[in-house]
Length: 255
Image 1 (spheres, rainbow, N blue to C red):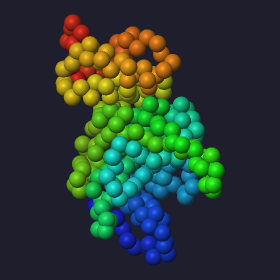
Image 2: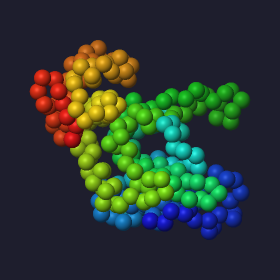
Image 3: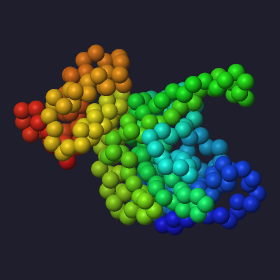
Image 4: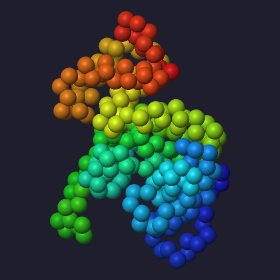
């Protein structure tokens, strides 16, 4: 994997954002690959394709690439809130590659892969409408809150300037792929409970510790008034998907 963004062909573009978009998309077409199959490359989609930039020529998995020259952080700017919300509810989100590059070298520092089945409504943050004086007055955008995605589904492809082996990336992708079997409503709950468990930062934990985050889960799912029941249900789902095992007496262990 080449870890320098290409500079060739950028002269016609004057704005920094245009140059960055052309350079990163060109890099993606040459260096990114499909984690869902063994395809070594993904192909560029026509400019203007809604929500996706690339497609796998072998399995048709779709990908979006977002890039920035600053650290990725926990908040990623996305498009229209209503459109993204509908895409998540209809389960038609692409896999997401997040690229962090360093200036002025145009050196790729970090790339994260977020599988398409790791999206849930919980990670969406609604932004304020644009002011009346703006060109698109009243338009409402959204952000992705990465800290609401379990670390299992934030897969490093490039880490601190070093490429991760594709075999390791694909293994990590397959590890969380059972989530794809769940419908989007159930998946959102499962992801949120898994994220709570990961926040405990321990391999073995107690049911009572997850109950301790009931208020947080209630805030994410205000329509549900039986949070403890839902937590127990989701722990069973995670057991069935082989993310954890039950040790007895309210104790669990992550795999």
